[in-house]
Length: 266
Image (cartoon, rainbow, N blue to C red):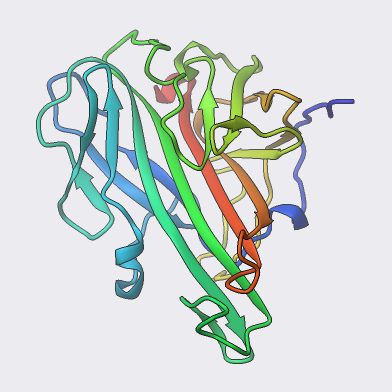
């Protein structure tokens, strides 16, 4: 039976705990005819901070998907900040961030970007891949579904089946979780909003904090997020599977986030 979503503070969720930061896509409020200012969020939502130099090569340039197709954004400012190459027309867009598949192995000395073939004494190896997606509605009253409800081909992705601009507090927002293009049944999706559970600035742990929503996907990979307040929201799914070559690595770990605005923040 499908679990009922409830407005509770969840403790640490073991199945969602990961040995990595989380990643999300973020953008400043933009009007039609303005340049988009976007950012890769990497760390603890919603705080944005510079990416350490040794990890920069893992990240692809941010991309923007609209009715006219996909465009690559230009890095400008701090190393996590991007801008569009031209002003945006009114409409609905998807902003994409990508942390490319990367081996991480751990031995008694700690974590390194290596596979089991490189770190022979590792007790665990994970190839991590992260995918961020943000729904942007540029212009007043824009609630287009055509672009945002189409999969973009991320290994693990959360597809909004209804534009968040059409969702009011307490209503259901349907989303579908796909893994390698196929519906992912039984996946746990959690969601929270900016300000729900502030993290101490000195907390450097990677444990999943308290969440405002949790539910599992059905046989078609679908669940319904119920936002019980307005604001800036982030949904997250983690999926781990055996790596194809166990002599090289043990697990393939994919992480996906979807960020969106509910209510007056739009």
